[in-house]
Length: 302
Ligand SMILES: Cc1cc2nc3c(=O)[nH]c(=O)nc-3n(C[C@H](O)[C@H](O)[C@H](O)COP(=O)(O)O)c2cc1C
Image (cartoon, rainbow, N blue to C red; front, side, top):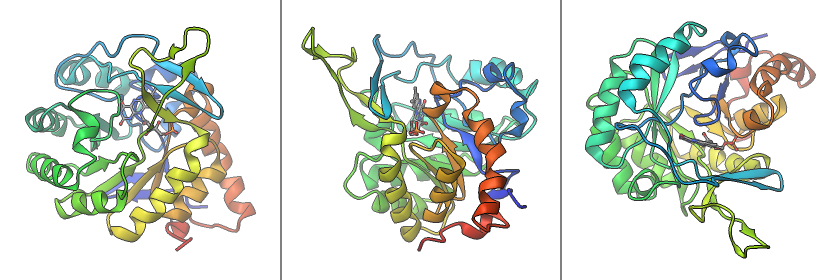
């Protein structure tokens, strides 16, 4: 049974990848199981300078999902390269995906330049879709022109594959994916979280200190699937699909919509073994559905 997939030249032994921000820098999970089973790991969102993140509370529970407003808490790219990646390399021997965020084009470019020099990093995922920071993140990803300019600028300093991670908080995600492809992106990651909020009935105030946050988890799966389906019809470059995936059957459905690989996010916060268990159960589900090689089904629903 064939589980391996290819992401713009990056060979993965299976299509399952923990999503950025939901799996730390990976080594935290190494005491639970052998993380080498994972197809790759999307590292925690990284910026040029260290960030403390947003004030708390920054998590709210919802029916079939959660809202987060972590706000890109991270130690900064230099510490990620000198401390976090070497720690992960003790446990994980496959190429990882660096998730890069910024507040200006220069910041994105500098971070990508630094990431490009790191041997453990197999690809860069450009987060132009974070809903939890002001004047950055999502503001680059909600305009096709901004997405085009930024993609073009970072491509100049990257020799590793570039996946641009898109926001679902737009009217036409396919046009933004197309702009990234035209600017030279090697692939598209989608979706980041949907803007949402909760209100505490006792205080009558927003639950999240930052008022709004990003909604993710099983509730968003049909929205993510629809967007992957639309983007598959708009571009020729590979797609990493994500949003609400919790099972091997969801992985298969996402790949039928057009994903070459699949990331698992909020599910890791509910069950730290989620990715491992999805990988374990993939062959059995494939057999039930008569799938020999997982690559045979990519875009099969079109
Ligand atoms: C707690 C939390 C932190 C996240 N941090 C990041 C991040 O740093 N960078 C990023 O690109 N996406 C981040 N995301 C978004 C996820 O990577 C993913 O795109 C989204 O949650 C949808 O997948 P899911 O429904 O499986 O969670 C975060 C999500 C959560 C729940």
